[in-house]
Length: 294
Image 1 (cartoon, rainbow, N blue to C red):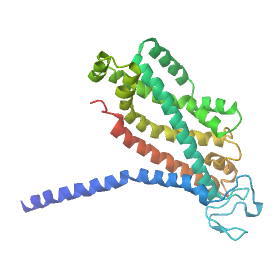
Image 2: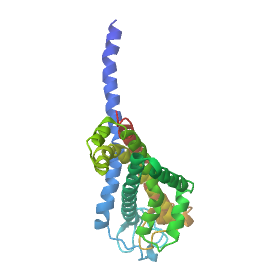
Image 3: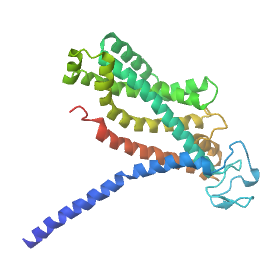
Image 4: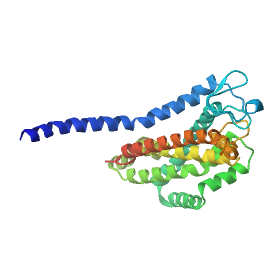
């Protein structure tokens, strides 16, 4: 009997420790993303780097090696003597800038189309839904390659190319939410009272799409960052003056056997960012993606 009482007293403490550990582990993605955001915003202000300038005297230096100027290449240099650490810092800014811009554009366009189609239904919903089905027939990355390769290389072109298909997910999610909310009692009451339809959309329908849109935005951000790195790896989209992790990885593919850090470190940074965003997206989906209309 004494043993059972002791076991009963120990179980709550074990559960509390496990809960606390799980809570701390769930905060790791937030910390990782905060570090990336801080590097993207403040890093370029503290680290001087010119992607056009080369230093052949310091090419292919290992991480921690000393430069001819007396400095230290903490993460090594590439085949043209450019510092890998600086490329990681400036590449983080490029990835965050393109990711946030693409997600914002896609969320605004997709939410507007999805809410409009879901609320008004009829022929408008049919036309928009068939248009989405047609776009879904094309692989997103293939369409982005075609669009980015058809125009002069710039950040705006990359954002436009990635937004061309990224808005579809937001439209489908918000359309489903609008179809459900339009049948709710408060929406019917607003119609009976003569409230204009645009105000019903803004005040009574649109707020219920916020949770699913935020959850989806994190997942789309990860996909956009990965797609941008893919375009840069292929040499499409961004100009040579822009620093991208994809470009750095591509520059080091011929030195994988002798200078692994050129491609390995940017690839590791990209993988850590994608995994952290994916975990955060799953957490937000579990919290906001379901049960919003109960």
